[in-house]
Length: 231
Length: 262
Image 1 (cartoon, helix red, strand yellow):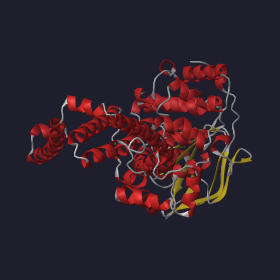
Image 2: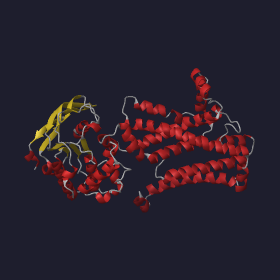
Image 3: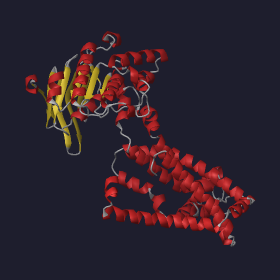
Image 4: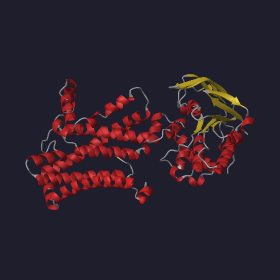
């Protein structure tokens, strides 16, 4: 595998939620305030349906908060469209583009930015080598295993060199052995690129493996949780 | 379902019998119609100039209608599948009006619309009443409603997540739909166009009322069946009907072959 410095270039930036609120029907988030420092791997836990994914979607810019602000580094990104926030997003099932090959998925963010074909090809090869998917470049998502899909989704999220990586239960659909391998990969990528990561999971084992910081979401609020409890 | 069938439980057996009887009824109907004609009579009917014109006009108008229906169905189907707003159920019900209204009534509504001041204004630009444009509009009014249903169903079954990921990677919503969702919806788009095409091929009432049944002008295949029946030429009516059955089966087979249920 190549040295990670070859694909770095991201500038790490922390994430801050400031008195954030959001509601839809009876469901509401109120006064959510917490900070993930730059370069930190934070894990967010909480019961199913408590609003973790909603929080991630607000950070991505896919949902508008009804109140409060969201900061990435010093930038207030609350009103910015998703593509201008400098984030990489890996959803639960990878959510790969169904009609694109792995090569096209990895090059997507750069193609949208109208980079040269040579630059896109070089970046795709770099990411594919690094994430161990170089032999899969011409395959479609339906021909990939669960672990391969998540690696491709990770590569696609890293392609445009984001400063923040958001992971929504990325390992939940994998078997235990693959889960440990991919967790190790996530941690290595985050550390080598100095990314700020926010990772949602239900697994205490996963949290113990990955977390520099741990948050718990309950009753529409987020609080920091001691790391040792997750072990 | 295969294992219950293998066990031949009375429950699955009875369902199979009911389905089989219904299929038998459909096949018997088509077989009886087919046996009424012969290849010679079919060729004789197809040799008539007015029927050749009718076939040509049907194929052209149905294709134009299918494309126009798809142009409408893709944005409307996407809107219905993804947007959440108050009164959405009412909008959905309103868009089903062409499906639930009697076709003849739809034709009458079109005819009256084009007698209003707005309709007369439109007629000065494009004359619809009793013209080929009117044939297309009458077909479109009903075909598009079926295409919208199919596209809505297609977008309902496509996860919005890949589209959202595309937006985090730098796409606008429109770019994400264009680059990610529409390629994934291509089978649904083919099915929607096919449904609109097949519906348009069989459209009769609205065309008769709104566009008329003038030979070499607004006569399409269902009109031909009606005109031939009205002069007692049953053989020609059956031959044209069999031709329409052939077209319909071809469309159905194409849609099924692509794995998209209509």
